Amino acid sequence: MSPVVPHFELSEETTPDGAHVIRISGEIHVTTAPQFSQRLTDAIEGGRNALVLDMSSVEFIDSTGLSVLLNGLRMVTQNRGGLAIVCTNPTVLRLFQITNLDETFDIFDDRARAIAHVLPATK
Image (cartoon, rainbow, N blue to C red):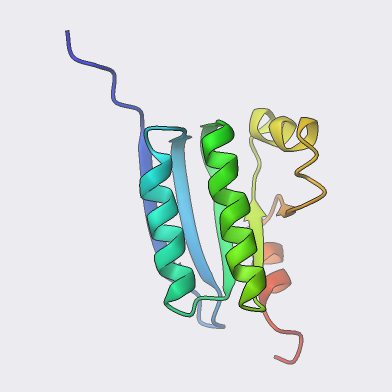
């Protein structure tokens, strides 16, 4: 019997106004977090400092995934950038709330608002 492979996908795009969006779908946990971490690190080290993590299609996230998010926030903040999360799944939102990470991250239910939040106010 083969192991169950979790659904997990990443895609990236840069919006015309300069925000970099990483769209995550599926499950973020100990098995998939390393790939997510690498993609996030590569984006930040590549100078992408107006970051939106579109997690509207994330079905599950564990503590390993939360650690990746916190590390990404730390790196973006050190580079004087901004990071916003788009999250609409009530279960995932609840995890942010019970861990008090809803106070740490800028979380939006709308992608356009998240993008506007991370762009410099001078635009």
